[in-house]
Length: 309
Ligand code: AMP
Ligand code: MN
Ligand code: MN
Ligand code: MN
Image 1 (cartoon, helix red, strand yellow):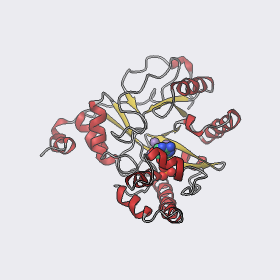
Image 2 (cartoon, protein in one colour):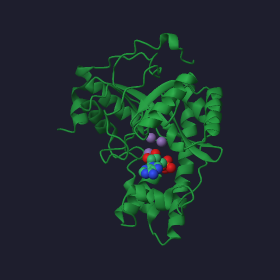
Image 3 (cartoon, protein in one colour):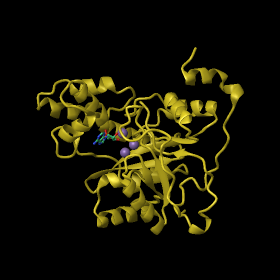
Image 4 (cartoon, rainbow, N blue to C red):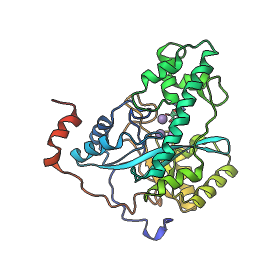
């Protein structure tokens, strides 16, 4: 359902971060440690949105319950759209849904082949052992370009992961392999099938012309997409304002997420997100936020979460 301005007010002033990663994809913290850190930073509602995988959600949920915070089941789905890679964040997904899990499994299969292919392409540039190196640095099931970037930095081929993307891993560079990800329609369908909401992640990062952006918003809405990530840790403040304006004009819900990947702070730290601009209708407006605090059940898990004992 599209938001309407009439009921845009009286949004609870909780602190939301609806886009984060754990080591189940290309973040560096275990899900429980991510949750503990978000809690310490004042986040009250956190979505874990790993790339193409939901493995971290069970651990994150236990950790969140122990700390009395709300964990939103999320995922960041890789999409190929007119030759370009886009990311669709799913919020409140049904992790048990077979179509979602089969879809994500297909994307992970492509990811695995792509990782090996990146390794072969880098070998042609006299960089040996890149696949094995990236696989070693990946702590979960998926291998991402981020792991290659860390490998290239560790081995001294580049100064930083950002340089690894610039020189080797971005589109048109020697280690780049074009994506064969989900269609936009598939990604939105997998999110919505269990009652979830689909969000266009960090829209400013795609650098779309205004015509192409309008086309994306139109197709996204037609598929059932409802929200735009207006506030992103990887956006400049002007981009936040620009996409807030678009969301308001075109009646999309607005989401906010740091895209946190770990204390190395590639994008933004936890708990630092600015508020949604005036007039935006938060994607969480109709969510029922439950108090999930169950201290008696969690006594043991709390020790586990805090890493003590
Ligand atoms: P993949 O899904 O394996 O293609 O990897 C995409 C991930 O690489 C993104 O989610 C970011 O975490 C990371 N990434 C993409 N571009 C850059 C960049 N220029 N600098 C640092 N990290 C990047
Ligand atoms: Mn990432
Ligand atoms: Mn992304
Ligand atoms: Mn992300």
